[in-house]
Image (cartoon, rainbow, N blue to C red; front, side, top):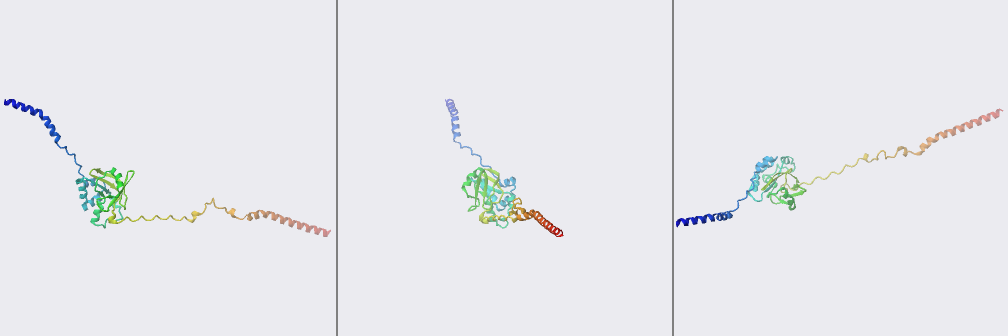
Length: 258
């Protein structure tokens, strides 16, 4: 009897096992999706291009760690505009040599948006100007999109995005050819010098061409030509008069002699 009971129980367990396992599988939570790849900004800026000056300033002011945390520890991500080394070396006005460490930090924070933007996002972003930067406050940038040519205007400069160094959520790094200068530190950009007035036209250039100038011969009085042509006729008249006088004198003498 005991043996028969055990066989019945075993059979029931075997029959119910698949349904029990299926229900258990249905109640398990889905596997988590892989998280975004860790972004090492130091390695990226060291290997991606001539960004040594920008990386040096980021490290010096500890802004690098701020950007690193924003990229890897937030949902929003980060977008960074990185000037090339030549952009810093060619910067004459304003000079960065006399600014404080806090001002330098603000300038660096001004080169980033506290959100990830892919290249295609800039088309819609241009409709939301001005765009807040990591520097906060009135340190904003204006983004323009002209048929795919993206520019970032700070007031002092209006560089275009010349290349995409890295763009994969949660971080986007774009290369620019000028340093972005915040007006909060340096004030508004000086006005452009007025355009030079065109030089006056030399007097010699106002003289009509030789083929249009009146001929000297045409300006000379006609009488001179007439006098020259009339002089042979006058001499002939004088010669005839003298000859007639001599003939008359000879005839008179002959009549006296006879």
